[in-house]
Amino acid sequence: MKKYPLRTLKSVLIFTILLMGCVQNLMGCAQHAHQVRDAQDIFSQAAELDLARKFNMDVPGVSNPVQESHRYYALAVGTVNEAVRGGAADLRQDGLYGTALTIKALSLWRLGDTASSKEVANEVIALAGQNSDTDKVWPRDLGICKSLPVLFKIDALADQAKAFAMQSPNDRREETIEEIMANADQIQTDLDQIVGDPLLRGHPFQFFLAEARCETANVLKEAAAATAVFPGNAAQKYYAKYNDYKSKAIDDLQNVAKAHDLGDGYQERVKKMKDYYSRILQPLP
Image (tube, rainbow, N blue to C red):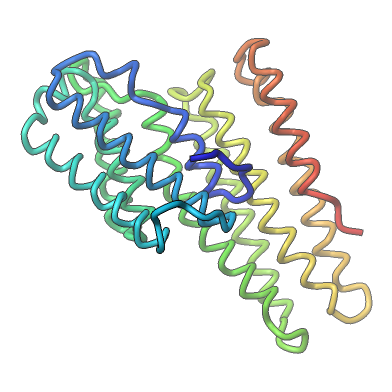
């Protein structure tokens, strides 16, 4: 299936997971390692369906992409459960237990079960805290699991912003946009804490966190633009808030490779992402 441009936080996360791969880790116990790889492949198929659905692309042989993607996510959860049930000790020894749980946490998130997703993610975080040679958690998996609660918040913020924008002009209230802006500030604080995690310093996962800031700015753009109906110059306050947020997000994206000493090889990726977000995050007047 063809890959498509990314426009929402969920799409960015999916793209990150599609790229992350487990291949470099799957060198140990053949049977259970292969089950984890199968779960990863199944998750990727579900993510592809999500992307196709998001951009209204027909998928041959699939009449209901939402239902089909959910079927794949549920299958990924079942495959991980089977791998863990039959080979938890081997997966721990090979450093794949955390990866398996990360795939499960992501799949549960995509299924809408945020409570279970957070519970599984917390298990990965606790595992990383043990700092054991036989329970290794890869920085990418730790970053994903630490980010999930923030992603839940950004999803909720996007729903809130969309609902606000869809209200009739007479029903839009400053109290609502103030709450949206306050929630965005909390997301920014949460992302700052993850960025500063010592285990994630110098890791390419920092790119994902920078993208998450840009996607949050995109959510704010929709909400701030909807204040154009406010009387007088009331909207200017929210335009300014969005403009400041998006400028800081793009600056963070511009500086992420240098700030985390990721080397010159990442500069082209930075340029492409900056060009993309500079196009979609236009300033409000």
